[in-house]
Image (cartoon, rainbow, N blue to C red):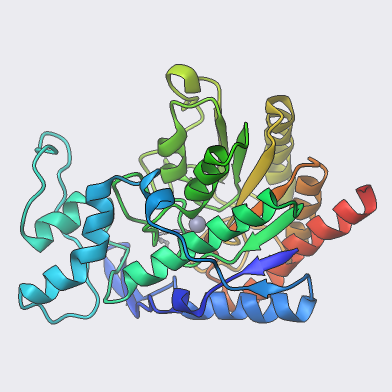
Length: 349
Ligand code: SP5
Ligand code: ZN
């Protein structure tokens, strides 16, 4: 299994975030990717490749042009307005009853218009890093198209919270969605996105909610008590042609392997029924018992079990990294998931 990564993904390097109403040290930091890379190299799963260059087209298939322009231009606008802070947060949003049809000219108005939380800092190099992260996922998709059975896109910043036209939850471009759409555009018939991150993949769900060609399944902490709070309930099943192709498994705080695995079995049955040509796994490691922002109780060895179960689905699989903030154990947990997968496909084939 090849891994894709670019050091440019480290350029987005926030030091603080707003969480639970406080300014706290940032969780989504460059060392997350560095430690995973170090462990991947040691595990010798295969080559580590730089992402290929892509035009903006595959990103624009998923994200609206005005949103991409905002991400691209935002630092220039920030400086042009004489602002000097290096880490930028929104603080006002067009929620219920306010206008969504006019994009403000002023930068604070734009930041709120294109975001859904105050917990996602932006800086001078956020666009560069986010674009590379998306290209890392796209390159992984291309590896599957050229015949590899699996690949690991070491994406960072993560992607699954980003909507077509919204950033949030540390995410700017929806890497998994961009890879899925690219596979469809290159002739792959049906794609499943299986999101195991602790948080609901609200962005991915929203992007494919009315489509039958991309199935979305997410196992996550119940949004009644956990971020992102406003999406991820079990009764969100898809709309129009997409009806029946969206599956959410909200689970309570304190969930450990047995209950989590039960949800995964149900999800795997739905995946088998859908019979995708390719599976994309939104691989969050924040289910881990020691994750600093999460409240599930999965252990390091449980990640091997997740990887092994995914291998038994028997489809070409692209792993796309999402969350996971227990940085000290992140490399171990990630390689466990991938070796669990690799050991099982080898045995099976
Ligand atoms: C990709 C991803 O995992 N994004 C997660 C974004 C979560 N941001 C909100 C975090 C709120 C944390 N509250 C719990 C703090 C416990 N001290
Ligand atoms: Zn997460």
